[in-house]
Image 1 (cartoon, rainbow, N blue to C red):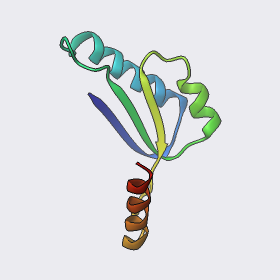
Image 2: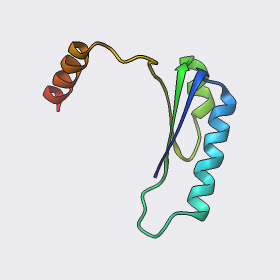
Image 3: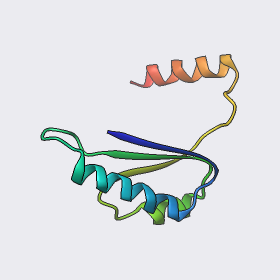
Image 4: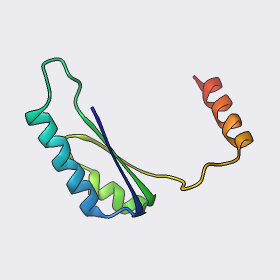
Length: 89
């Protein structure tokens, strides 16, 4: 299960705590035998690398914080990115 939270604001340490609550609840109450552990992804308008690192380190769950764009790049830039990703695999 992937729990995804999106917010326009910048990342705050409370976001990591809230996500950790969601993941732990899911692990204890919703998972079935054979399920993979849940993963949390927090998408923010901006993030401070240091704050994100210390807010999420040491947590049992896989929890990731990522910056996202509010507007997609040009079609050509997306095509080039996808092409590079496919070549790297």
